[in-house]
Length: 324
Image 1 (cartoon, rainbow, N blue to C red):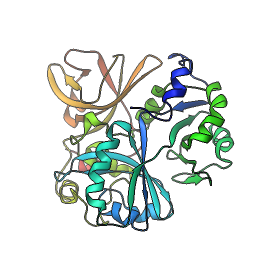
Image 2 (image 1 turned 120 degrees about the vertical axis):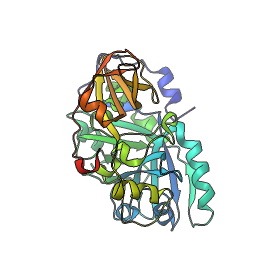
Image 3 (image 1 turned 60 degrees about the vertical axis):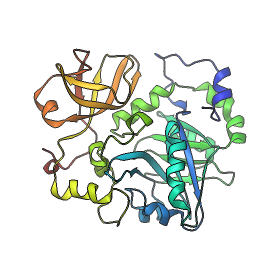
Image 4 (image 1 turned 30 degrees about the vertical axis):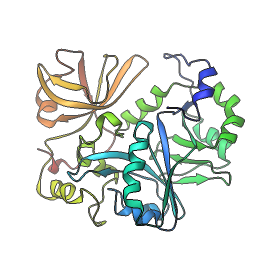
């Protein structure tokens, strides 16, 4: 799939896998943006997604997902408020399917959906705020977005000194010489997402997991009092009447090439599935949905008799009374 980065990255030297700039600028061609415009854009998404878009309307940047009738996540996203409009950041390999899904229902609302031509850039490191200021002239606070008149915007990832920046083509071309000076591979961004326990549903994980299994309820990405949306009854029933037998864990090992949808094992027994992975600086970082009993009681490996995996504590709290 061609992205705004395609031609630039084809000509740029590949960043060394073992060398990362202290403050890194990371092209993110594996992410895309759906732009919703119109006076009912937020209202439309309120009836489609796990997120409470009344909070997004107040200017908050929130994560969330869109579920099937069975309450399993078809797509995950970051919702970026823009007045009465809103942008959804999601994996590029989910873009066409997400547009087709949403457009089926959008015909009944005053909203228009389209793929955005914006290029997405990750900014991390001790001088990240200064880099974002150079790109936009201002820096967002936690759960906030800042925007410029030419369409560029930036958001902060949680409370971290880490930012997601969207640039139109003219701005991307203008800043490309400076971006190249601190260029980093995309694995850096995804390793940071994994370390933060922030799951993304790529095409390989579509329709496999319920929102709580990806810990979205711990991130304000699931609302239990917002009203109806597709899959809401199943999601609410799991919270109020059930207990999670499996959930998202951060695992680390020395394996190479782990793919979403591949197996996590305890010996020869399949006990979980990889949601996303990144190998950076020689270390494999995984987010995987694994049975709670297996994590507590058994040694885990990537695949049957594969490299050992160890659990790394997540940086946020989870309601333990909801686990089995």
